[in-house]
Amino acid sequence: MTYSEAIQYLYGLRLFGAKLGLDNTVKLAALAGHPERKLRFIHVAGTNGKGSTCAMLESIYRQAGLRTGLFTSPHLVSFRERIQIGRELIPEADVVRLVEKFRALAAEFPKEHHPTFFEVLTVMALDYFAENRCDLVIWETGLGGRLDATNIVTPLACAITNIALDHQQWLGDTLEKIAFEKAGIIKPGVPVATAADEPDAAMVIRNIANQKKAPLTILGAIPPRRVPDVMPLRGKHQKRNAALALGVVNLLQKIIPVSSKQIQAGLQQVQWPGRLQLLEQPDGREILLDGAHNIAGATVLRESIEKDFPGEKRSVILGILGDKDWRQICGILAPLASQILTVPVSSQRTANPDELTEACRVANPLAKISVCQSLNEALQEAAADKFVIITGSLYLIGEALEALGFYPSAKSERELNEWSGPGR
Image 1 (tube, rainbow, N blue to C red):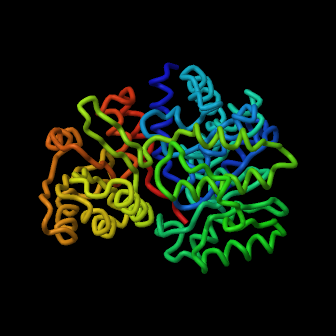
Image 2 (tube, rainbow, N blue to C red):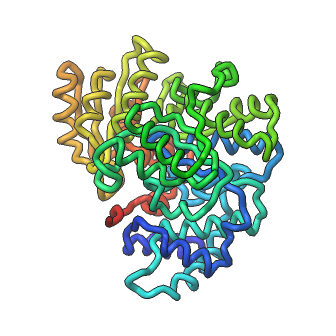
């Protein structure tokens, strides 16, 4: 098997869709020798900020000298981004070896219960981290938490970033229902920290923590002075994510001691692409990338731009998935721009750029608004603009990083992010 063939096998697993439930993942882990039992985890759930919080935790504990595993999704360009040790992407040869192993294990399932892409990926990652003897794995949920494949682990601590409306068709149509799914990662007696501040959602988390006798830390108890004034990740919301990461570190100090110096170094050196990432071009132009893919993310992006780039003449390249609240996202982001270029996202689920254009025109009738057939066409249209924002979907951000030459092209691997959504 070549690396390309391994990717094609994983791509083929999309035919099995996505499932909410742990039975397949538990069985697959058992066939693999239960690698999760050989590891220590911090399990992270929430609506926005999961990846950034995971990156901060990984950076802090790596500065403390630990061999850190990092499991996140989706990937921006390369599938290998999802499984990292010490921020080194899993090598292609290991992907091939593990795919061969898990293809054989998956063949032991009845066809009607064949493991999905994410179920195979989850146990592959566990196996890789266990065989490399990671000291600590920073473990991000895929969708929700309670019935997410990642929830087969018992962590040292849990973190819940925030609760907002997203994936309502699978997680529920109220903040309380979504909070219930996210808080499903809480385990009996395992400490949990949260940055969720919406009262109804916070109450759900508090109730579940109480039921499971899990010590709960609310973000407001974390001393703000421990968060550096300047971090590589932009936006005041990243200060909140950093405070949450510090809350988790505090919870685990007796188990994994970390010095203040190591914490500061970890936060000051953290990297997480595609989130308010500013690319400065040789000609002095600036391109801001942010995968704001839901209402809460779009609101944070707008606040950050108004604060950090006031008075700029802004062009926005906007592409959104059709199963997101794209009308409201357009309403939030369109007023930022003097020029808006709507594009399709490289996804079967893309929203129609013509419909995005109409929604943007309602929100900002004074802007120049154009429909482009591709991101490359939009980049050419905005080639003379001094400040360009690309946003609306992490899929679009991955495509932009390739188009701008910051990542090697891996289009077939970006398509692995495609999924049909779970049944209930």
